[in-house]
Amino acid sequence: MDVVIFSDVAQLSEAAAEYIVRVAQESIAARGRFMLALSGGSTPRKLYAMLAEEPYRNQIDWSKVEFFWSDERCVPSDDAESNYHLAQQVMLSKLQVAESQIHRVPADEADRDAASLAYAQEMQRAFGTTGVPRFDLIQLGMGPEGHTASLFPHQASLEESDRLVMPVTVPKPPPPRLTFTPVLLNAAIHTLFLVTGAEKEEAVQAVIEGPYQPEEYPAQIVRPTAGEVTWMFDTAAAARLSKQK
Ligand SMILES: O=C(O)[C@H](O)[C@@H](O)[C@H](O)[C@H](O)COP(=O)(O)O
Image (cartoon, rainbow, N blue to C red; front, side, top):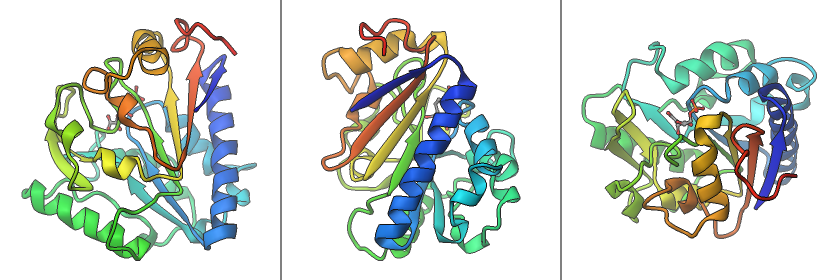
């Protein structure tokens, strides 16, 4: 696990953009494509905007990138709360990307079980596997109570060992969501957490330096069996870490 601390969101976003460029180039060189899962939340907004601009934009062959989301709020796709909407507004609409490369979570469908299954199947088709897809990169955030994707403390989603995607009802509005499950998160080749803000300092310390208690701090459940995990913090979020790099 790598931990890197930045003085502000702009520097963190630049480092995240450089990291994504590197992993995208390596993935395309090795496997001919870059399978990427984005998060929601406010932290990656700047990163997404940066990726659509130089000097990052022309360093990625966008025609070889497939976009997914590690969780989605059950709202219409043009709602301000939609994770897809954020990425679409600040990044995807500015890139030359075909519709077929953008795998939006069908979280606005009434039958959320069916939508979860359909999304898992769409993912498996895109990866060409009937098993657990291995994303080249899953980008995640973390909330002040340690949730990641839409895996929240003490919820049954933390115990899920069968499904890849499942419906959940979470304490943070809007409550109905669809989320990647631990089995899918833990298959990733690279995982990048972006965490900023003083309100997260306690959870950051617990997740990085505390005992393994994923029921309390779900972000701890992300421990890929054969993958690299990188945490990028701003100084406010990292204030309680004993090792300041
Ligand atoms: O849909 C969501 O809400 C998320 O994907 C969620 O896991 C998010 O990443 C964290 O809540 C951090 O959000 P902030 O970046 O806004 O703090």
